[in-house]
Image (cartoon, rainbow, N blue to C red; front, side, top):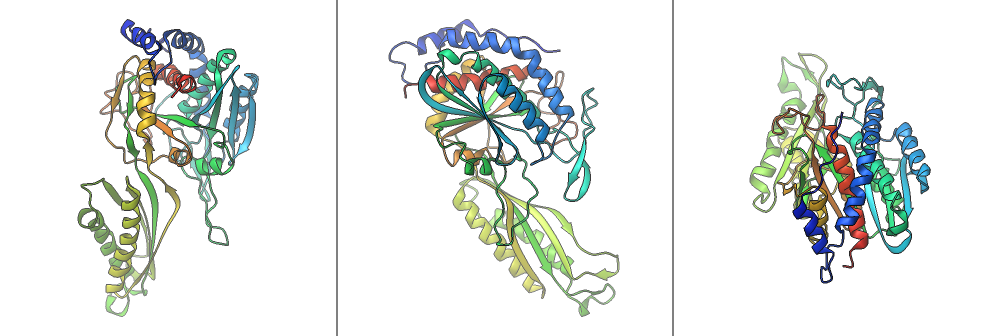
Length: 447
C-alpha cells in the first residue's frame, strides 16, 4: 500500500553532522534530529495514508470544510495542543509549545476541494455533491489538498512527540477556501475576506517569524521537491467585463448595437495587452477570457454580454499596469462599436507567491536533507496560491512535492484540477517529513 521511507544516504547524514558543527551559521538540523523525525514519520505512514483517503472520500467546498476541520481539531487536541477553531471561517490552528524557549514557526495546509467530477476509479473516489453558485455540483479533491491536510496532521504528530526538546513553538495552520470562496461584494462595495487573507486578519501570524507550505503535484519526478527563490507562482486577478449594446433582430444588425461582435473584438484586443503593451522581457504575463455569456436565440441580437477571465502576473508594477490597460482596451474597443464596456476585477485577487531569497537559502540545506538530496529549481508556475497572503506578513517558503501515480510518466500524468488527477501515496510521508524538518531547522537556526 505504501513504501517505507528510504534511509538517507550516508553522504547526506555526514553533511547534516558537519552542518551542526560550530561555525555552521545557517543549518543546525543534525543527523540525530532527522533520524528521530524519520522514525516517527515511518511509524505514522499508515495513518497519513488513511487520513488522506478519508478526506478524499469526503471532500468539502471552499468555506464549507466543517467535517475536515473537525477531524483536524480532534487530532490536534489528542496531541495535547492548544486548538482554535472557526479561524477565518472554518480554519483550525494548533499551537505546539516546545519544552525549550525559542522562536515561532508556522506550517500550513489548505483543506478545500473543487466543484468538479472525479474520474479516477479509486476505491475511495468521491461521490459527494454540494451546492455551488446555486447549483448542485460534484465535489472532489482534484488539487491535492486532501494530501496536504494528511501530511500536516502527520507532521504535527511527529513534532508533538518531540515536544520536550523542541526549542520554540510550532503553529499548524489548516486553512479553508484556498480555491476562492464564491463571495459577492457587500452593500458598501467591500469584498469579504476568505482563505489565507481571512486567517491573517484573524491574527494567526501575530507572533510568527516564518511560515512554510507545500503543494503536491503529479508533474514532477516522484519524491522530488521543486522550488525557486523569488517569484514562484503568479498573482491572479479575476476579470469581469459587461458589454452593453442595443438589442435587435439578427436580420437587421444596423438597427441594433451588437454586443457579441463588440465582445469578440474585446477578446482579441486584450491579447495585445500582453503581446504588445507589457514588457514581458521582465516577467511573463497571461490574460485569458474563459467565459462568455450572451444571447438567447440564434436570430436575436442581445442587449448585453458578460465575459469573465483571469490575469496572471509575476510583478506588482506589471500587474497594476495590466489592470489599467485591460480597462482602457475593453472600454475603447466597445465604444468604437457604439457599445459600452464596464470592467471590474475580483473577488479573487491573489498576490504573487514569492520566496524571499534569504529564507530560501537558509531553508534549502534542511529541505535537501529531508528529501534525500532530491530537490531542484523549477520554472515559474502560472497557477496561483493564496499562501502569498501569508508571505505578505512574514517570510514564507513554498515548494512543490512530486508524486505522480505509480507507473505514470510525470510529464504525461493528469495535472492538478483534472478529473483524473491522482498521486503516489508513498510520497505522503516524505512531504510530512520535509515540513517537520523545515520547522525544526528554523527553530534551531541561530541566524
